[in-house]
Figure 1 (cartoon, helix red, strand yellow):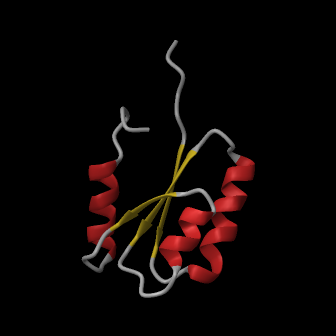
Figure 2 (figure 1 turned 45 degrees about the vertical axis):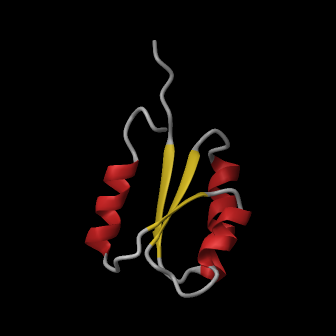
Length: 81
């Protein structure tokens, strides 16, 4: 039986104050999960804080939830996790 993977998907924009603690909490709860932060063109330090906390960061420069969601679907496939 093939082992299943778990991915945590965190879409965000300008979440510098919360993203580090959020990534850390998910890492504690799901130590084997891949934690992805999909940054939607933040203007603060969200990307650096997320990376420092151990997240895999993807950036979408076009603002909007639909664009960010499409980026998630394009990036994550069952074989990429």
